[in-house]
Each structure stands twice: as C-alpha cells, then as structure tokens.
Amino acid sequence: MSDGKKISGERKRFAGTNLVREVSYLHEDEAEALGKRAKKERCSKAEIIRRALRAYLGIED
Image (cartoon, rainbow, N blue to C red):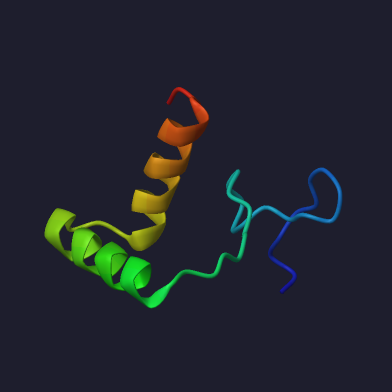
C-alpha cells in the first residue's frame, strides 16, 4: 500500500494519521469478549484495545 508514510524504523503511518498497524493474536474467549464489548459500547474493537493498552501502560490521553 503506498498510502503510508514512513516513521521510525520500518513502520508506516496509517492513512495520514499517527496510527501504526500492529498484529496481535487473541484467545477465542478474548476475541469473543472484545467483540461483545465493542457491540455494547458501539465502537470499534481497535478503540477498546487502544483504551485498555493506554490505561495498562499509564499513557495519558
């Protein structure tokens, strides 16, 4: 995909944003719970993962 712009290392920004694509593998029960939470909160799975990760790592918004 030629849309990405290089940032540090080999990573590229997604669609002109500061988002970087990472791939993680989840257990089936985790993936199911994530899907249910996303549906309940009417947001994307990625948004839930970002919020949880930032909270876990102590990164302020």
